[in-house]
Length: 394
Ligand code: FAD
Ligand code: DHB
Image 1 (cartoon, rainbow, N blue to C red):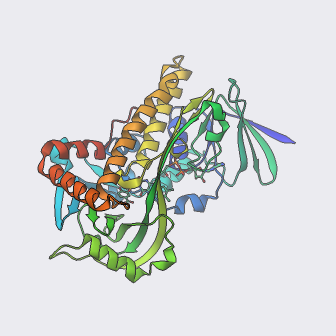
Image 2 (image 1 turned 90 degrees about the horizontal axis):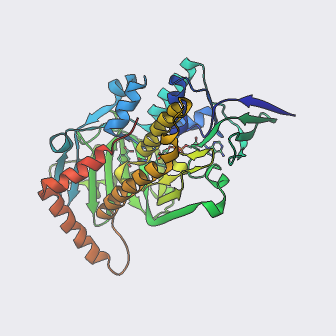
Image 3 (image 1 turned 135 degrees about the vertical axis):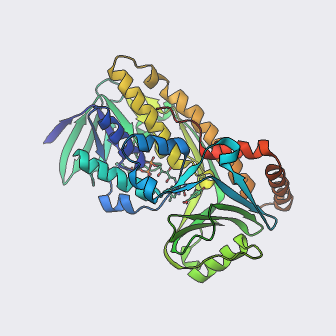
């Protein structure tokens, strides 16, 4: 027997995109249900992004999600670029009058879950076999199983916020879908450590051994990354080897890296991916289900936030009798997504070492590029404008 639940917007995936969309719709009086594959603890414990753009923070704050962000988050007015043994500050505040916040994705998810609990609208966790059906009609449904029971969620719209490995994108017939993809021959080894951050702001470093990034989560917790081969075995990296390599790539005369207990480490492969269109009938895609960027520009989470902010606006207007925002959603967000792909590719190519016959030449070109960048206010403003974020329509 199948139990039918009725709502307006059915959301597949309870990551940051799905939970935020649900919260925004709830605040706008639009009934919705989030279906999440994993359990609650898993979704909270996933360690991922750390930088929130200017507009993303404004959006979260306007929607009752800014309290911990503003007390525990770290406001950063710039970043450092390091290469050829020198460290250069890029002052976002001076260049474009904007800043970013360091606040872990895990914390955003925790705040969203607390808001859902307070609203009495928790996601449904540990659902399996979610299948969007009838998406070519105005009465789509999501079939799913929970605790061995079969359900159907009858809705007006389905939104797929189920990430890169989700099922929503695949519900769009293959003939109607174009995939643009690019793999990198490296990944990032990321750690979290109980160590005081060794810098006031993030350091992005190009070194002959590869890219390194110093980031942080709080005044007591450092987040650091190293460029490694994509299939690198994490077991080959003892804590000491990780700190030694970070020292080599980030080291500067008169500056030392604070070490501490490493309590999380993982290797993430890097890819660029866009699936077009982001709408098919009554199904919309948002966040990683539609696009992935290499993490160098810190754009993944921010792009997901931008997608769902526009979707909220689209649904609100639709229920008020105007579907124009929903109708142009795919075109608008694909254009935004390609601009973000451009920035992320540019940052990635500028700051990582590449292998192959042209590697030595390319490394010198990168040094030339970086030297020009730090010498030019126009070039620095270009970076600052993109890094602090494209406008988020809301
Ligand atoms: P996700 O966070 O992937 O959430 C999707 C949700 O859908 C998950 O909870 C998943 O369990 C659920 N789901 C999947 N399939 C189903 C299904 N069939 N049914 C129901 N639910 C389903 N970005 C940065 O900017 N900086 C970083 O340092 C960074 N590091 C990253 C590290 C890793 C390992 C990964 C994978 C991504 C990283 N990103 C980073 C990208 C950033 O975290 C993502 O862009 C962001 O999580 C996107 O949010 P989302 O909600 O769209 O997708
Ligand atoms: C972090 C991740 C990024 O991808 C980035 O560019 C900067 C910071 C982080 O996890 O802190």
